[in-house]
Length: 164
Image (cartoon, rainbow, N blue to C red; front, top):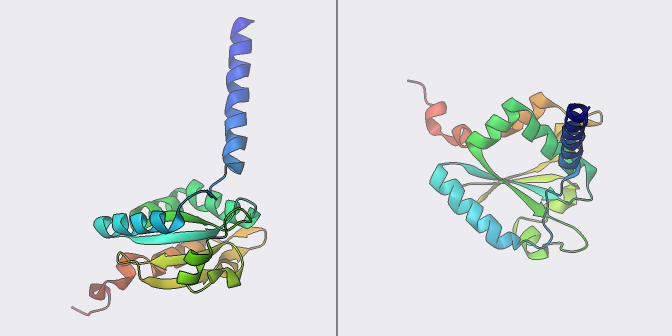
């Protein structure tokens, strides 16, 4: 009987953790976004990656859905890890990060989430409306993968396009 209670307790804890992970806050309204992004750019440059900024807020179900989608799919997660420093830029009533959003051309005009790609020097390469990655009540894996590949450092490598 004691084993039954231990096993049951372990299962309940694992279910609670799974549910917690589904709703974990991924945006930090208290973060110094300008400083965090500058650090992400330095890290991206050192690792020969780009920065993928996902702008939105913990209030945004589509933002949380995208994060879960790309971090739980092994292929998408691998593509992210190999090519990007992934940063969540907060936009909420607690902190709208006005200066940061202004710096990147007011991407909030596309709604949320919105994606901003920076190179290793901090130059904005693209702002992506997430609507083009959606399908039904979620995201389309092929569209997301195409987006990530198309804006990865390898896509900007001239050797990809020069015939040998």
